[in-house]
Length: 101
Image (cartoon, rainbow, N blue to C red; front, side, top):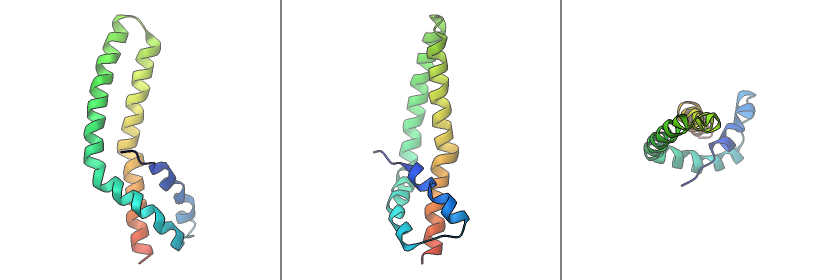
């Protein structure tokens, strides 16, 4: 399953500026889906990070710094999604539900 919470984050500027419209209700389908699938996605991230740890260890043994950096970048990306992007997208959905009642 692939969601694009980044599209939800684009709403932040409008929300911060107090510009909330009925059209924003469309994003609730995505934020509700993200919220319901979050635990599964986080579990998948754990599996990905575990594979990246193995990949990184092999790259270090082969002195392939570019692959070590690649693994580190992907792990950082996953962490950013887990700690910033996904929670923010869910928060946007919950906030819009309150405002668009």
